[in-house]
Length: 341
Image (cartoon, rainbow, N blue to C red):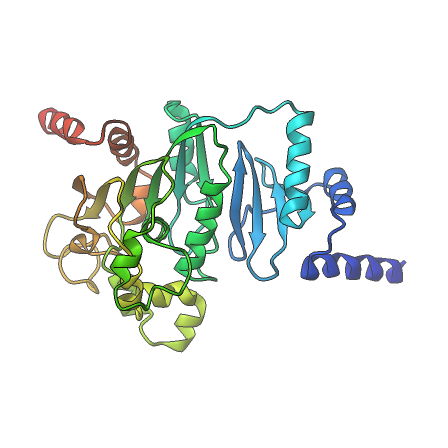
């Protein structure tokens, strides 16, 4: 019995490590004995969404998995095999193609789609968007460029019936979206003498509408610089992205442009010169300085008395985000708030 168990585990590990193509074996196994996942955190990133279904890529081994809305794995193998199984499910369950307008929610550093679940669910309840995508990427185990490539896959894989795509992003997620919107997603032009000229040749998806940034480290994350710095042990846990937000921000900044779409910024702070953290100069939300959130070209910028993570948990922030996404301004909502005070 022990030998049989050992042989089965060896087969399973081989499939995981080398991504063998017989997805039929995995399909039968997954659907008879559901494998619950955490939806992706350290090593998995989303590449395709279809309603509540999504396909994720393992960034270490390059294999893929199809998971349902309950984060249960339903197929495993190559992208093509997972996509084939998804197509079969669409026929079996008579699922209609995605269409209309889509909101993509992007989480920040060191977290996953679990952290932005409340925000995503709130937007679904408003029924303004036909679909709300809660995008997950492995924020500490690859570079900002790689995060942007995953996001690019998600956008490219949206049906042609989708007419509009908006974004709401928190913290690092704002930088990921900026990188996606900023230029060709390869390394060749980042070090070019005139990266702006190369960037201007790039046109993002024509369906992209508006973008709301929540607590964006648009000039680097001061707390990352202070806490991570050149400490090798801390840098090991913070990963490449930790370096890009802190120690190597100057290089990161060269790869970022101003979004061509309309965008707004919602910042947190205390409204004084002390902020929430003694490690950051001036007002701050505990992670990013108020000044560090600002970016030329923003249609709107507003400050709330709020810490960094609270921006993801507070309904008034969701309301302001929706106001901008639907109207291109939250001036009217802000004026009402002043009157009520």
